[in-house]
Image (cartoon, rainbow, N blue to C red; front, side, top):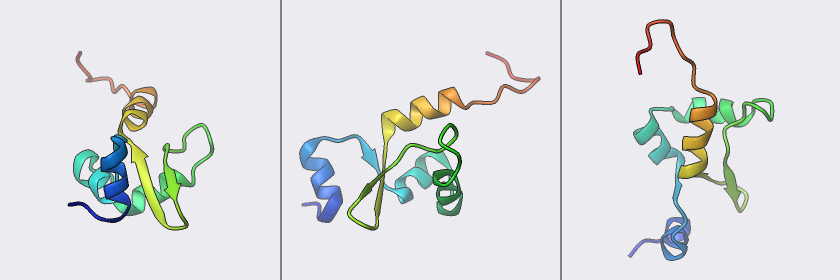
Amino acid sequence: MKSGIAWMDYIFHIPTVTPKELEEEYCFSKSVQAKMRMLSSKKKIPFSKVGSKFIRYDRFEIDKWLEIHKVITSNHKE
């Protein structure tokens, strides 16, 4: 059985990821995540804070945020 906050996420089926999971799945280091949480409101990565120290990211909000903030390079092919 899961414990702590992750257990609550599991019970309520909230599609959230921890900073460690975000690092593994999206390749954003924890230090980059911290910097992105402090950016201006238009560029800030969406996150929730549970209690005073647990950060959680909504997987759907992260995907939407990435789509909005993607950078198209000149050699990009779709």
